[in-house]
Length: 370
Ligand SMILES: Nc1ncnc2c1ncn2[C@@H]1O[C@H](COP(=O)(O)OP(=O)(O)OP(=O)(O)O)[C@@H](O)[C@H]1O
Ligand SMILES: [Mg+2]
Image (tube, rainbow, N blue to C red; front, side, top):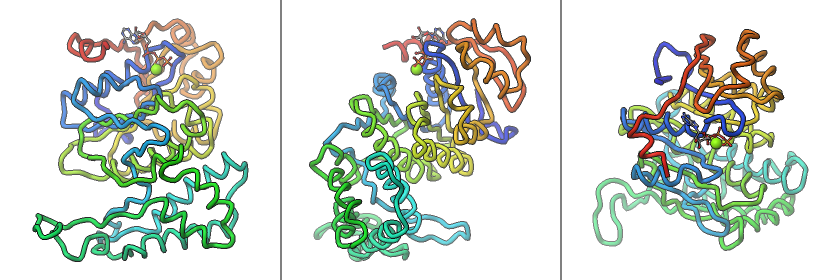
């Protein structure tokens, strides 16, 4: 199914169905098929670790997020960005917005309050100062070493990126601000060596791998999962979704999305990802076993609105009427949706509905059966 088709206004796909309906198998088939038939790149937010073995088999990269272990993702890593006017710069204000969003989520979940205006100002100043310490400003040359292509005495090809600041640098600066003591103290638990210090490290992820699996299965507590999903969706939006010469198409897969949609902050991150992915021609494929929750929240509906294609699999008696109503299906589809077998679905492509059966090809079942 090629939703990158230019005749569609939107490549995103949402997969809705009860547990056991066949959503994960469908996601697996979609991603494996596009990986073997086209020059595509895929990134999966793998909450349950279901896609790990498949990713291994196809020679992709698994990034296991484990508490207390450096993940290879540095929240403060920054790159040169092309602006709408075509000029290139280091967009530090964009980083300020990213860090604010992550810290708002942390404050909300740990202290049950929003960031106040003074804290927001302190965050902006501290982010700018964190980069300034390394001589990084909006000037695109400022992220490279002055010595250009030299490591020690050896000459190398191309420019060498400076060592990037990390969360520890930012937290040290934030501690000096008188109005953000509480925030800085909370952040001390997110630093290297602490259980939440997974993202206070240098970057070492090769973003060119054709299949990247962010495995969150070893994280058991909700709040850590929440923090990790915010950081990873930001990383996907900022790093992975950049245009690349190497791949014709890119997709992002989020399974078990209900775990992220239940928090306002992480739902916002998915909504932002969906909008920006569309602008950059990246496809988002998102699956949830709780369609009624998605339909009944503002952010859930905003995400659904961004999806040109819906794959409607077996529904529960609780969700079926909401699904029929939202997708403007005829009442005759009710029994079909309640009784659908695994792999059976109604396919809604920008309002055109058809019944489909999603079947694995022999080769695919070899890859997917683990
Ligand atoms: N297209 C298909 N063809 C044949 N069998 C299928 C198909 N899709 C799913 N199944 C069967 O149904 C089982 C459950 O499928 P899957 O794990 O994809 O469900 P799910 O909707 O992701 O459930 P959950 O919400 O619990 O994650 C699979 O292990 C497989 O046996
Ligand atoms: Mg599943």
